[in-house]
Length: 483
Ligand SMILES: *Cc1c(COP(=O)(O)O)cnc(C)c1O
Image (cartoon, rainbow, N blue to C red; front, side, top):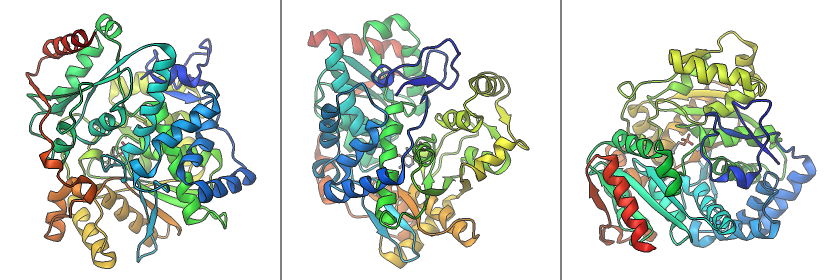
């Protein structure tokens, strides 16, 4: 399997999986995509059902991912899958179990990992892959990132203890939830460097951008990222769509539909890829919060990115995005993998006009008909109602992000545009967003046993001014001290 950029030129030669693994954007500003999607047939699906029932999630992950990775020996890839997906990291060998609610909707539990959010599902595998490739190439990597909560902690727990990897993570001082702070700052390891920057999340991101723009520094200190456009993260997420189909329908071979709380379009893009491969998926429902850039596109055909001022701070903060970084991958498929067209839309129209429109085109109709997409959005009030309703009927507490997806799923069922089996992706545990749960239910969720005492883990964090030069100096000093 080879990979090309969504904005590639006919003269580009396709790259291998390990070649693109550590890269972010392609040099032309596009995103890497496989040259074709492997096709799964009924025989392969039947085998996957058997593999999952007999061996759990890890061997299924190997089966699915090996269709896309041909430059890592199978035995090595398999060993990595078992190290990433097991009961120690995800509470059981099923890794992504399901619960059926009173209303017939299924919940796919993706938040049983070390940081209680679905990002662990991909990040644990990414940690294994990074360590493996760095070792092969005899290199080290300094991961530099900015986080408002979920991604940073997930990256730190995935890279913890991995050879040749250090993590420098910028956080906005005093602006994460107490649980998120405890989770990150509690890590006591010389290779995990938490930085509390005197600023907001956007300041953190600007510092990362400024440092990454210094090509010489980036090269000399081997600076890398783990952002949501990384192809391997998407690939790892394809696996749980298969695991969910197996659990809800597998034996009968029926189609299932999914409702996905969406921010950067990473999670649902993995569902799109699974569907293109031939996994029996009917509808894919994009659920947004008040930041409805994507709902607007699927309703109107207009993709209009927002400014920071137009981006609302909501009670499902991991979906507060103004621009969906993985959306270009979907559009690439939608326009028939026409790289020139993608360049025109993303490198010209979007940059110059802040939007593009596919309204009235046959491609836009395809989004719904050929690609099975539906969409909807929810408000803070909707989330409170949804959390309440699910709790009343099922005694299960869902987190505010999952509540967005449940609300949009229920509306779609009532509107008759989707049928059962319908699966809602649970993307975080409620304990991460205790304040909103308190508002919805009048009490805070219990701390799961595995996080007991997390508040007492100490505070390992460097306070820094909002200054890229100071952060660079910290990187220089840290690397020098260990050599
Ligand atoms: C990141 C995140 C999302 C959004 O996922 P995307 O891949 O960005 O669409 C939803 N819920 C939670 C809890 C998250 O952390």
